[in-house]
Image (tube, helix red, strand yellow):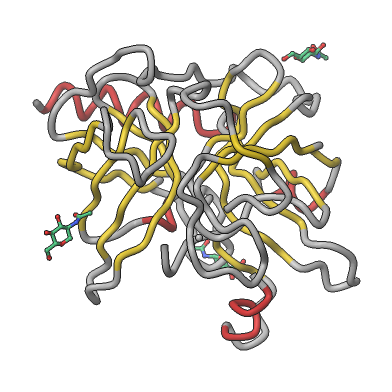
Length: 247
Ligand SMILES: *[C@@H]1O[C@H](CO)[C@@H](O)[C@H](O)[C@H]1NC(C)=O
Ligand SMILES: *[C@@H]1O[C@H](CO)[C@@H](O)[C@H](O)[C@H]1NC(C)=O
Ligand SMILES: *[C@@H]1O[C@H](CO)[C@@H](O)[C@H](O)[C@H]1NC(C)=O
């Protein structure tokens, strides 16, 4: 993460997009298939590079991820735990991508995107959707967990073959709130390749989407930002509704 920060010429904002193929820092392996909504997204950039992001299944037609994972084409992997064992992984291409209409690629505000699958996901024990959190009532959600196949150490280049997870505690931060992010802070958190994965809290609902890391000007450990789902609910439901009508 810090390598990328320097490569970016001193910008203090790093989208958690994986350049090679990389894991959650400080986490542990998830119980296989305990998070059946998890999606591994393989993406093809227009310059021919291949990258990975996380995502999560909303229903049989839609996956949610981060808008900075926007690419030329995508393959969605469902039902995966160890990506090296190809058994029972559903691979589905994406028919259309809907980045948030107010996504700002500089500030990464509204870093959410919906992907409409070209064929319906086949639900089973290992493939199930996750419900979205309701409206924000002003209290930070508790007992939050992240999962992903991103890098597991700050200098590593390769993705984790197995799904990793980590608990995070959300912090009360004014700048985060203004930009519609939930935030956590510390030496452990999401890494490159975890972008787009869900922040799952208290009642097992998706409250956020892994977006980016910021190194505070004042020093201190990195702040990790998650796009707030409660703030995007209207956009999510109208986008899905409109996309289904057009079919
Ligand atoms: C990426 O592009 C290659 C060909 O250029 C194609 O075979 C592959 O399916 C694409 N992968 C994704 C994730 O779309
Ligand atoms: C995007 O964010 C940057 C940095 O915060 C800001 O300067 C710019 O005005 C924003 N763009 C739009 C269209 O809001
Ligand atoms: C907000 O919602 C959470 C559960 O999502 C609940 O624990 C909390 O008491 C609520 N706070 C208020 C002020 O309603």
